[in-house]
Length: 248
Ligand code: NAP
Image (cartoon, rainbow, N blue to C red):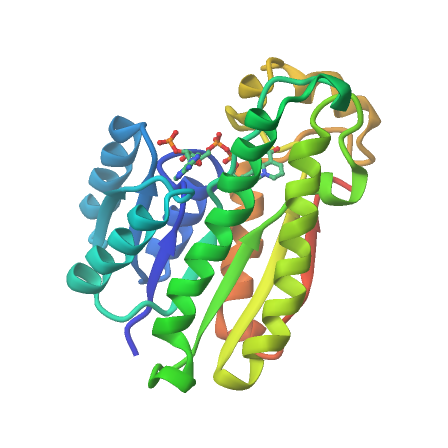
């Protein structure tokens, strides 16, 4: 069976590292991005040079109509979806809870939670044996923040990732008998541009001494766990989480 994966938010960061590893394993790939078209197109060109079957599709995962259009384009151009990596996520400038307004909280929740739900919904319609599909695997990219809480930084973001852990547990049980495995990864302190969005580009250097392994993580170290969870080597794994946070 051809393997086809959608990785949301994969023009850069952990998503792009995952795309590189899945392409090397022979997956047809859909690279999704929200606004950084240049990064997504550079990645597509790199993977095509290596022989990959890759498309890029712009879509904001927090907007329902854009998610349905994304999946329709994937259906037409790549065929049957077998793997979904829910990865597109945001955080906003560090602040305490008493300073947060509804607009900020809702922005975090619609991207980090609603977006994951919508993509799961579309993936299930394509993968589930209940709808004539042949099964598949979903990996939700959560965060160590779901366990740690991100006090003084972004409790809203941490709470959104807590919701993703619950989604992973519940959905894994809901669709297990239909041939779909659902698992989560909980990265922490990975060297990507997301920390600059929180207002502290050098956050990992500050935190590194308090991480048991004494360093930040690399995007490819998260990608390896995602690829394993999607693979047949993990065929008996569902509703599980891999923590990739240097021991924190
Ligand atoms: P990143 O480098 O900032 O990349 C984020 C990606 O998400 C970008 O490709 C961005 O698209 C995309 N994106 C953002 N909002 C989107 C939306 N509404 N619709 C579609 N795509 C959207 O972040 P990262 O560090 O790789 O993070 C990836 C995931 O890992 C996130 O879920 C994050 O919460 C999680 N995570 C990261 C860390 C860490 O330390 N880095 C730790 C724990 C968890 P554009 O390129 O178009 O902007």
